[in-house]
Amino acid sequence: MVPTRNVGMMDKAMNMTQNQYFAWLGNAARLLLITAIPPLSGCITIAGDQLADVKPVPGKIRPAVQETVGAFAFHLDGGKMITSNKAGRMLNDEILDRWQESGFIYGHNYVEASNFPDASVYRITLSGHQEGDSSIFLQIISGLTLTAIPYYVDTKYNVHYSLQNARSGCVFEAEASDSFNTIVGLLMLPAAPFGQGGRSATYDRLANHLYAQLVEQGAFDIHEPCRDDGKSMIFSVEDRLKDADRLKSEGFISEEEYQKMRAIILKDSPLK
Image (tube, rainbow, N blue to C red; front, side, top):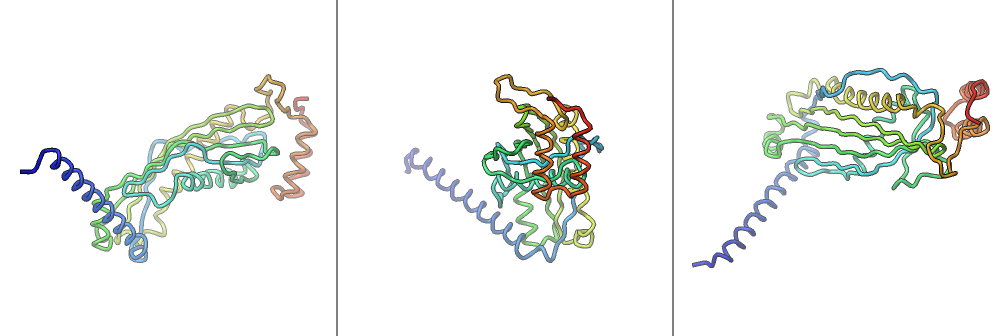
């Protein structure tokens, strides 16, 4: 007769072995899906419905921004292939590239660990989480059948942007949540070249909602300093002209855009 204490330890060891086995089997199937199957399968994406389509009104200032990844968590059922920081950087690129293409900003640069350079004015920190819900069992079956049986991944985003204006000391917050569903399978191959609209639509909505919230708060306007500790830097004509010179010298704007910006700065009545 085996003592109760030993039985409990044996059950625990057996459970650990089972968990490790299924984790190994899931990773093996996912590796097969990633390496061998993609040429034989396709995917389509379907956008979520949490956000409506919006068209933001551009802010008065079109800055270059510095961006970083803060407390951002990434989870994918079956095991993630990239780090949370990498997932956050990829999400930032999707959103800020859209801002740049829409003419909302001149450009954006990644900064590690919030080490913003002293010269940067507009500083964005991403936080939130990304969830990838999927059936590990279905992934395994799909892999074993060479995706004749499709599998899915439901990607959900909760995105929080904190935009700091280092000159005024003001901090603006925006948040948005949305999702898209990816279906991968052999039958999806003919539709794959045309089936990425759902993913793109979700990123469009996230980008537009985040920007619209920040614009409504005046994040891209000239505003009073938010700090009273004597360290706030105020937008003066000289400061704005220096920013324009920097944008031109760093290649963010053309000579024509630079001259237009100078004309606007000299015409406006900024805070002195």
